[in-house]
Image (cartoon, rainbow, N blue to C red; front, side, top):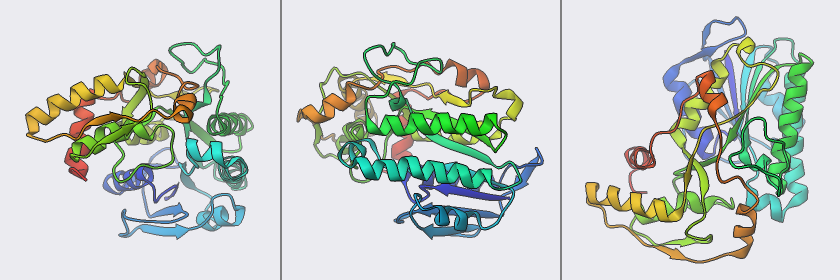
Length: 328
């Protein structure tokens, strides 16, 4: 079978590709496990990541329909993981680009999947940023109304609605995973307003200071990168009849504050003989204002009941990061 990952050059795309190569198969249109014969990674640019067969890297703009069709390459039966997206901070600063990449990109992918005869499976990476506003409950869950207060969250909510409607009409077999903030991302900070959530672990573990733009008491929903990859695959593998008519699932998450993160880091440092960098207050009103619109806690019981994994303890997530990436 053919598998396509948009955002295949990014952190989660690279991790997903690596996991799929190790797995070697996914459930295909037949309903049975089929070997992955081609793995297309589509992104605007690539750094590291897998290159060995059956991987094919493709550079292109997800907002261009011709690029999506080239990635599909005439296949009737395929799986597509749609992870490509502008991040939250970028979307607030570049509204038109956010509409083009996040909305038009999603629409082109869905329309391309609709155009083939083989009922492809499409797994969409949504976000809990699709919730927000004064009426937002704590915690949010799958029955919570979409009232996003950021451009990023708006694009995710609209794509979720589009995906559900395509499924209703029988155009393709779609599923959506609402991600909390995923930790710990390696490398340098990106433009996401939630970037501090990885930074407050990553930089201290490297022995470097972390500039914290939010209050130390700020609660934030987080999960580990390995749990997210397992969730993408687990949701893909579910039979359509298990999913019902609402194809969007909130992943379970830990509610973590910077104060709590600092305490867990101290435990890890003591156990691994690490010298930690400090978490330093660098309040940024713009970042805090965005974070204030997001949920602080997530109810993922529906996903867990379906069979998706719960995240391990924060201390174990830190261990997974160190064991995978070292102190980079």
